[in-house]
Length: 549
Image 1 (spheres, rainbow, N blue to C red):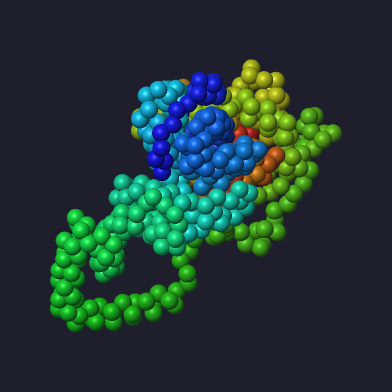
Image 2: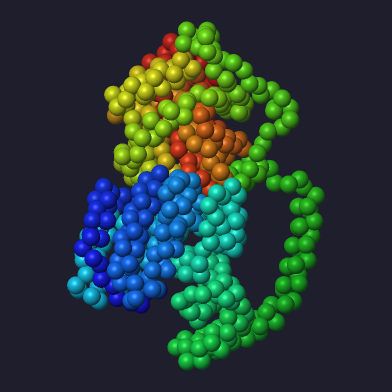
C-alpha cells in the first residue's frame, strides 16, 4: 500500500490529543452511534498526516494522495456522521481502515526511529477498533447479504436501497470478507466474495492484490462445496498465471483423479438412478397438486428473514378492515383529556398498537445525549445459568436511564403510564439501544417462560406483563420489528411507539409475541423500551378466568 518513510514535526503531536477521550476498546461495531467518534478520530489523524506531508512534500507524494482521499471522505462523513455510518459498507471500511491500513502505515514509519508520529500513533492505537471489530463488521455485511438476498456485486458497488452516501468496496475489501468467511469454514460466502474480488481485478481495478492469491482461495472454496470441475478450471487458470505455484499442479492432478473416479461411479450407478428419478417424478406430481406450504410450517429462521424483507406478511383484507386509528384518552385519563394521543392498530392477534407523535425530537435528542456515554454491548440472560452474556444474535449497545438522571425521563415514564394505564413503579428502567453494523436481535420472548422460573426473581416484581417500544429514528432500509409466529412486521417510524401485552390477563405467557429486530440494512436505528412488570397491576389489569383470556 505505502512504500515510503516519513517523519513527523513536533507540532503534529498535539493533533492526536483528541483520541484521549475515547475509552478502551468496547465493541465499536455493535453501535453505529458510538462509531461516529471514530470518524472524528480518523479526521484528526488525516489532518496530522497532511501537516507531515507538507513538511516532507518531495518525499511523500504517494502518501499525500492517500491522505487527501481520506480527508475528502472524512469531511463529508463528519457533516452527518450517523447518516454516513448508516451505510454498512462505510462502517465496515472505517473499521478496516483504522484496524488494518493505519497499522500498515505504522509499520512503514517505524523504519525511521527519529519521528514522533509513530510513538503517538502506537499509544493511541489501543483506542482503535481491533480484529474483533473488523471481523464483526465483515460478518454483518454477510448477514445483510443473506437476510436481504443481496448479491456480492450489489453490496460492493454500494447500490443499497435508501443510501445517502454511496460507497464502493475495493477488491481488497472483498478479499477481506472472503478471508473472514474462509476462517469460519464458510466456503459458500468465501466463494461469493473471492469471485467478486476476482471480477473487479479482471475489470482492471488497480490493486496490490494479485489474482493468483484470490484464485487459490476461490478454487479451494469451490472444491469444498463439491464442485470439482469448476475448481479444476480455476486451478488451470492459476497455473497459467503462475506455472511455479507450489500447489497448483498437484491440485490439478488430484481434481482430475477425483473426476475420473466420480465418472466411473456415475456409470455404475446410472441404472439405479433412472429408477429413482421415476419414483421422484411421481412423488413431485403428487406434491404439485397440493397447495403451497403454509406459512406456519416454514422454519422460524426463514420466516424471520422473509418478514425482514417484507415478504410473507399474513394479514387478510378482512382482518385488515378491522384495524383502525383513533384519538385515545385511555378512559378519560386526566393527562389525556385535553390532548388525546393518536393510536393506530398495527396487528390484531396479538394486539399491537402504535402511538404516533408520542415523543418529540427534543426528547429523543436528550435521551440519546444521556445514553451515549453509557452505551455498553447489549447482553442476554443465559437460560441455563441466568448469567448475562453477549451473543452473536444480538448486535447492539444499550444503556439504562432512571428518573434521577434527568427530569425528562420522569416525564416520559409518566406518559407511558398515562397511555397504558399500567403502574411504572415496578417497571424496569428505560433502556436505550443503538444498533451497530447490520444490528439485529434474533427471535426471542420478552417474558420469562415456565422453564425459566427465576428469570426476574431478583427484581421481585413478577414477570414482564407488557412491552413499550419507542422508535427514536427512521431507518432507511431494514430494522423492522417482526413477529415470526404470526407473520407480523412493524416498521420503525421516528417519534412513534408500539405497545403489546406479553402475558394474557390470566398471567400465562402469550407465545405469539415472540419477536425479533431485523438487521439494519441502511441507516441508524435508535430505540428505547420499557418492560412493564406484573406487580402493581392487580387493580389496573385484573386477572382473567381462562388461561388465554
